[in-house]
Image: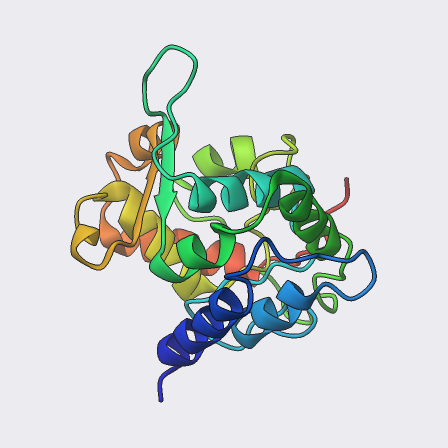
Length: 211
């Protein structure tokens, strides 16, 4: 059984257990976190190359993504769709959680350690990565609390997300999509080899960036 099917089965069990109403997500040992750990790791550090680490990620960013999964296709105040995200497992996992439960999930993972200090020298910054660092940090701190920290994240996962944003129509068949208007503009003049270099660069950085 693949990790995707394991995660899908976990999502199915979670939903089956909550058909009678919304789950109670306690402050101490949230039951849904046990389900999240099937894909994202017990300490928020995943062993799967395409599954992101959640530990130490920005709380506001995590909350924003959880809401996007639960309520895909939400429009901005002026009616324009600026950001959208969909993933079949995450959509199913979040659809029965209320705002308070999503908040506690985001807070829980943001408080975990992102992992040990990097023991190897980071890769040189490739062309195009400087544009990413404006909003996401890298060799310096992330200046925005609602954008993800990319440093120390998995290279395969980062490349996958960049691919989705560069060509958002490519995975509609499997209901896995990610749209972000500003990122799409930033990626417009980069080829896939450059995206690989950018992903490898951020993955090589320590997640412990000074605030």
